[in-house]
Image (tube, rainbow, N blue to C red; front, side):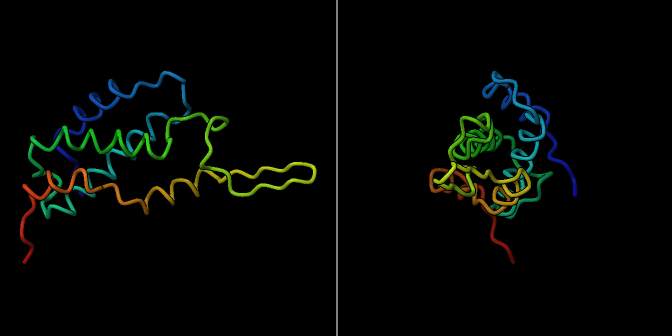
Amino acid sequence: MEEHPRIDNITTILKSLVPNSKSIDGYDSIVNFVISKVIDDVASYTHIPVIELPEELDKTIVSICMQLMESHQLLVPIEDKNTDVAALSEGDTSVTFKSPATVYTELQLVNTLTDNYLMILNNYRRIKY
């Protein structure tokens, strides 16, 4: 599969808007995964090949990435998260957290294209034969 022609620019913009201020391990991997997923989702929804996505959608892609990272707390330290708890017990207190693999699997199933962005993307959507 071909890479988005402006992926480096999108990555630079996203990293400047969402800096690694808490020195999160795997920050680059998370950012790259989110960008890749959002670009693939936008291309799939609009029926435009990744390499042909118009430059006008770059800011929308960055915005969707920011929303996804914020809503799923992808850059929140584990000790501050409240969404990665898999199980709790009361007697002798036990907390079990989801594994990183489980979190990535759940993230792959997330629909990144919310109603906020569908109106914008509909302006670029092509009819698929």
